[in-house]
Length: 130
Length: 389
Image (cartoon, rainbow over all chains, first blue to last red; front, side, top):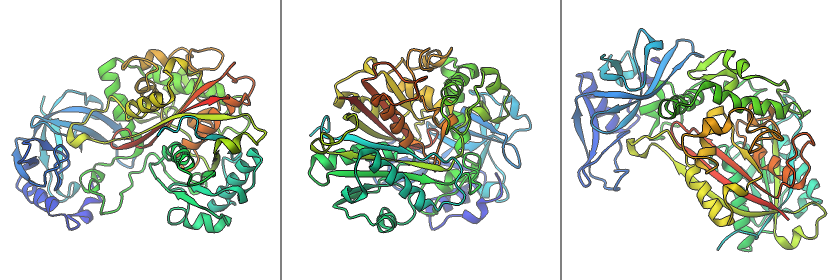
């Protein structure tokens, strides 16, 4: 699924624009609340934990592990959808980019990667690092 | 205020068609509505409350009310996907208890099969205004792979096996073999399920529900009216609703909102899972049933695989007969929303009108449960407990 996102960019959502700009320079951002100091995903303008409107970006090291995944076989191109649990504490929907979809396992360590606007319109994917 | 005993399900109708290319969706709704009021011994002129969800063409109830010529005092178009119609029954009972209407009609109908909809496998973007869609849609979340990720995590945490999941489908197929209207009437085995093509690991094609046309309708009425009708009386004991999402990134796919909606329904009904003789459990996929049985309290979390295995959901064989019409897995999943058929089969069981081969003896208390949206992202949940009077 790497075809459609270019046309979805930002849609008047400044958080998405900022996130994509950081991704273009290889930086993964997560959104945090300055009132309760907890992270959340997906990024938004209200903290879903304490409902404060004061949320900010923090840079993530992009490391995490696969919480769960599924290899989608009924598609023009097979792909691996997953929830990755970042070491920062949030779990995000994403894709695992791999040459070996049948080797993907829950618990594998992964690292965020950005393929530029040609891949998912600048959103991050994850690659296994073990 | 409780709805326990404040309203009755007096009419139920399931459309017999599973493919209806020549019937407009609005006509399917109308045929279901007429079927349900006639089942109750009423007419559409008696209906003063109407409930529908997103499958009804038009803005909320506006077009369908105009199309059918209804004269209403009350309406509600709560849309939480497949769980909508269970929520509607609760909302109808609340409205009746509050004096807002006397006879409530609920309809569902649609034609995804005739319209060639790739219901479960095609990711569909929502409105650009959806706050989640930009962050998620590019990754290809279809219905089936979101449920598949729940199954994958359940297997990892609890040792649930593909064979155990397959037993849910096997049970549904046994029931559907007695239902002349069912879309899939052949009995299948565990091996048949495991040998069917993998769609999204670990869910095979036979772990997925059917895509069917059709629909259904229900009539809910106040007690004073129910007593004047000739049909067996089905009293509403309790209901619960809940919504579960991604918890701000604290994602936990091991349980569903049934944990909350079920607890609320049992509390209002004043009964426990041990009192339930028959259960209709939303079965968009085999994993949906397994998780919801755990979350509703029929077994401990993580024990769902053992609970469903070896025919334990088959009427006359197992400990808890589930979806004796064949369910969404074999019978019918009209408009890609099975909620109303869950209630219809529970009403058949409580009336003693299920197929003799699957009728539960002395079926006095039944549960129906629906899920809407996707367990793997965000979903609505509605539980209903009913008693034969």
